[in-house]
Length: 286
Image (cartoon, rainbow, N blue to C red; front, side, top):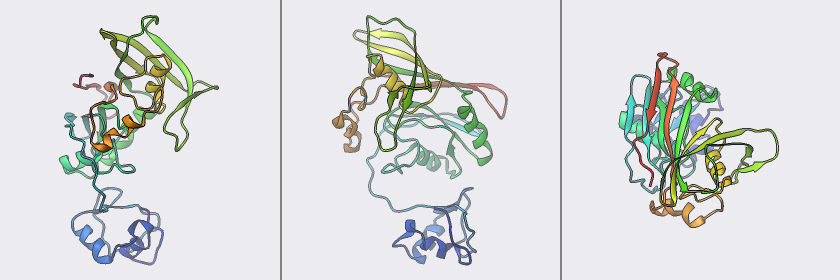
């Protein structure tokens, strides 16, 4: 929440916000005493201090029960600036909607006891693999800019049907749009904004392991490109058709059919050390 009143205390300004509806000064005081009211830098907030207009304040609210994601999230790399994890399928990157505690960010903040940890990029909830976080505010922007400026070489792996009448590698160029509120992205006419190279790395009967190299980062880009080639990724609840029974399964505690898409590796020049870095998932599809 962002404070929008001056001339009052932080506590008074918070209680006037819709996010604090039903709370009392005593409720906020209890949360503050437990370290659950903090500013954007992760520092504890003095509820009796004068409110500053536009100052973001973060606090923990009581949440409904969430479905526990029963998979480990190993740490691949940890230093003073960066932590890299091997995210499991079904775990969201950061809190959104019904997923708050069962997210990679909250797990990591609790495990490392560091409220300043922030993601420097995101993975879809259904996608597993390499996910990077900054450990301090000063390191956040340099790593985020790597992804914003497309300076990270990303490699994904996917399990999907084998197509006998298609030559690989194949590079797809098209335009993808995703409207707010729509579950699925779609290909539309117009200027190209989505480019992926797809190659068949291995086969096992009628299934193949594909190596996917995205040059852009549109929402659901790889899933849509694989489906467009006639080889939709195994376990995909949205492409080529919406399958509600698969999409809703994780919230019912059914993790038997994960999307077979893995953020396998990232490689980049570290903006803080200048070293070439590569981080790779240990997960195996299927």
